[in-house]
Length: 331
Image (tube, rainbow, N blue to C red; front, side):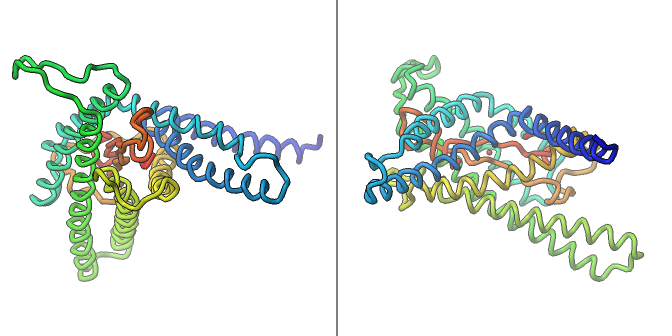
């Protein structure tokens, strides 16, 4: 092997090592693993109908004996396991919300309206996670159909369907609040844009500020798209009769949202550990929207209560770096 080939091989190995390190960092986080499983689950939900459709065409053409894909049938057994494990892993999902609540008073947003909106978002998530976990435990018969609370002194019925609807509605409320929050954030970006256009700053300072503003708008667009992709699934599972949304469409929306999350998490994994929280006095609201999309991975619920966690079963609120590292399926 020539020295040229040796150098090329060494360079390739170095690149692969860097990619592997980044992958390990991505999968080593709770949010990263959940995001990977969500992407896998949604890809499978889209692929399975395609496999069965291909099998039917081959059957009609006389190429195969059955009109069902055996691979599709096996993959269909995997998807509920993924959804179930994701919901189980969210058992401690309320902890980042509590962390967010504690940091919220220390690093308040830039405006009083943002402060109110984010507080209501925190409250919806504080209600969402316990309700989702009660649903999960009830569906698997871990807890009885009725429990007695010492405060009430009488049994309280735990209906899995009602718990599912309640958790989905809490998440839907979060999404609507997020649209309002994004609207308020857009106003701040517009204001900053006007100020920059009139400011008499030197070229270096102006360039740096414009770059930050550009990043802010880019993050705002991603956050809006993410929220829009999560809305159909959350709305569907919040209504008893649902909306006209089939499994493939639901998976497509969930996949689009999860890929936006992947983009954020993969970049963060490549950058190494997150920076420390801002010093006291540097209000949270002063950070660019671009610093991070407040990711709530829409949590959702599975169409089949027996396996939980599928069509929307995933909420994972992790206000990534923007919430002082205090970290929400279309599953």
